[in-house]
Image 1 (cartoon, each protein chain N blue to C red):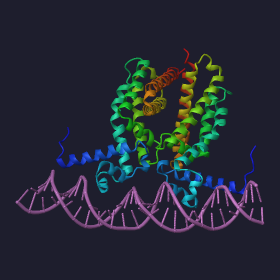
Image 2: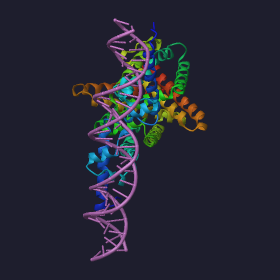
Image 3: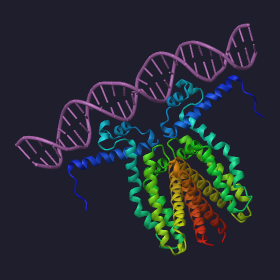
Image 4: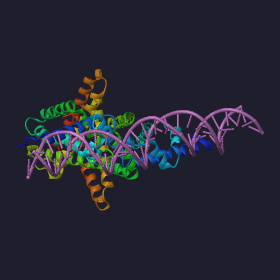
Length: 212
Length: 212
DNA sequence: AATTACAGAGAACAGTTGTTAACTGCATGG
DNA sequence: CCATGCAGTTAACAACTGTTCTCTGTAATT
């Protein structure tokens, strides 16, 4: 499947990844629209002009970051929302997955939450497209559930979007809890999980009675 | 109630407002963290140093913008979520109010959506505080509704947050529709309204069956 | 073994930035 | 009416920005 890269290409990808990592780090305290190309290269320890060998601009780098942050998430979503187990079990599993993901990739989560409505159009569009894909996938999983019998395609999609937005909000709240003072962290995390669980439960109830 | 300002104070407030307006305009195409103070003063036609007579920094200006964008919105929220009319009527009224508000103050809405998770901490906090106030107020209105009989305070607040977040997402979607090409605008607006209405309806259904 | 392709370095450019200091003019309060 | 306060100006600063052109070393190709 994968072709072994030459020394040349391998080194190039290494610097490219270093640029992405450095940018992600710098973006913890600012938005993409204020991220300077020199700032990034300085953090990596490479000449400013080297940047152009990998990206046309910081906006271009931002789009690559969207791919890195969301591109590999699709299978995870699919399997999590999948229809095994009862609804309460599915909710617990989903919330836990979100918490774990935020824990593992806080900078990626922050980046997406920040730039979803951020000041750089191409990045906003890239995020919007990925989220729309997520919604589609969630819709497909929902459709398999017997509870969805009799639902129109439109209604399935509107519910899927509700779920996706809810998951993003929850992720952002987990992140805030994570960034706060250490001693409050555990309690705040528990609180976020509890609230999010009940919100999902309420949405699930609405779903059950949709066709009344 | 209001004291007539002297010529001096009046002129000062005028330039201050001009700075806020100019900033809001410039923020349509970038984030606050990349907004330069010189950029703002240049747009107003005033010396860069004049900026310091009104704000300590652009972050400070951002906090003032939060106040301007959300501060005056509380009475509106209260009356809209108030318990007159049946639930379907209330939903229609709310969605229409959001659409009208986005139409009247698109730049404010964009600013809030953008900076809620933006790169400037004090601004994020100011927005978070205002939204928490909104949630409290929505909770108070929900508590008056007979449907809320038997609900715990915590559950009322979690529902209120769900509503507030939903309203913000809807506002942001209306804004996107508004920014798109003129010919698609009407249809996209209608579509956003339709989806948002059904999501609110579904949440309302979940609310009705919460105590089952 | 000779040639090419190309990732990265280096230097220089014109513009921009936030912040400081010392100033000017005028509305205000005594 | 005069002295003070203060919104806004002017000038200058060191530091920073994105982008260009030229160059170098070396991996890859022939």
